[in-house]
Every structure is written in structure tokens, then in C-alpha cells.
Length: 84
Image (cartoon, rainbow, N blue to C red; front, side, top):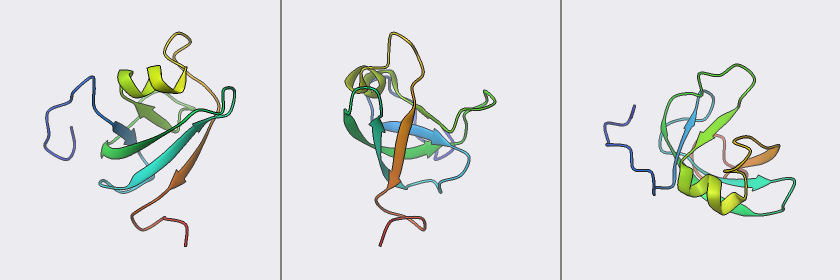
């Protein structure tokens, strides 16, 4: 990953082009209301129209693994863009 760590399928890792590396963010699936905290450890996603990629483990916890994508609210918790 961009931060130098090896990617783990079971991690809380996320990829974002906008949020700085190291930012922790709350991701809420707007369809299910489920939320998880992730840490931006990589750059991406490469697919146009996507705002963030999450690990398969996080996708499963959010209830979006089957479909692969969902509408989500992303709230920075730490880093330069964190809510004050």
C-alpha cells in the first residue's frame, strides 16, 4: 500500500484519493445504517465515480460485500479533514 504496509484482507484499511494517509474515518452504509471505522492506508480507488475502497472484511461488516458498492457517508475522525 502507499503507506508501506502489506495489505491484509482482514484489516481496517481503506484507499482514498482525497483524505490524507493515516486519516481515520467513519464509513456508514446509507442502505443498512451499519458503520465501521477505517484508516486510509492507500491511494485509490482507480474506478471512476468511487470515493473510497475498503477491505473485504470491512465491506462484509458494512453489509456491502455481495454488491461490491454502496452509497455511504464518510466522516473523517482524525487528520486534516476531521470534523471539529
